[in-house]
Image (cartoon, rainbow, N blue to C red; front, top):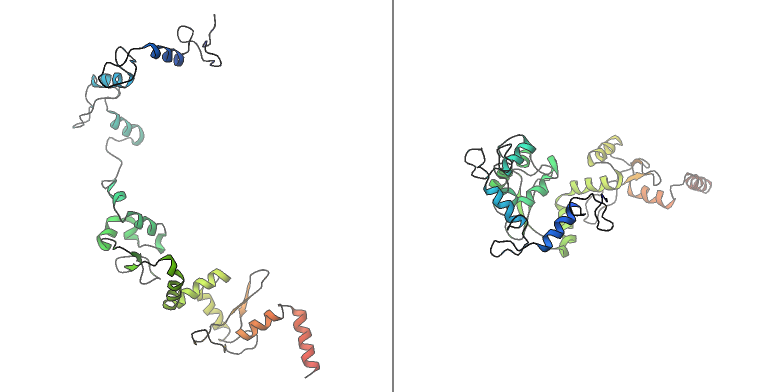
Length: 280
């Protein structure tokens, strides 16, 4: 006698009439009458009810959940709890809801996505009070006006009750102009960003190097004589090894250009010295 389902390639053990449990149920449902509940198009699963209405009817026969003021039927008669409270006990070992009292209200608030975006920046982007309390943030900034974005007037400090403003948003076509204006408003921060990106040093480190050199070029020992495009004094360029990226010192614009023209080659520079001395 075969112990496997007679359906080819099934391989499951026989449950009844030569079929496994799955194929037995399928075959029985094909010949079953429709569910007796009006409007239901499913086949009867137990008696005259489909599986959905059978389970609902069975649940209705259970006593109520033992948790006071619950009102739901017990899902598991062993625990005496409805499905909700049984889930809490199994997963959180408590009958009370593990969710915060404002669960769902924050996520539905129009400022929630803006708050989470700034919060991800950590202490540099938002003060501790606002990072840990969404409603404290909302109580201060109120509503977001159309066409604006939340910004920090004092960029060296995080967003907070005394450091925020709604600033007009800029269309993507005006980003270049916005960047020029921003750099003009924040020259030190812009310089710090440039130094970090290009040489891996901060503006504080740059100023310390300049002070150590007495404010003079590391080569000619002279001051920076060129001006920027706005006519103001130009900061002395940072000299670095183009192969290793290591910062070597601060040199004036003329010496910086000269080194570049001599390709940073000690041999060419020595030859230039010999040439000048020979023809002096």
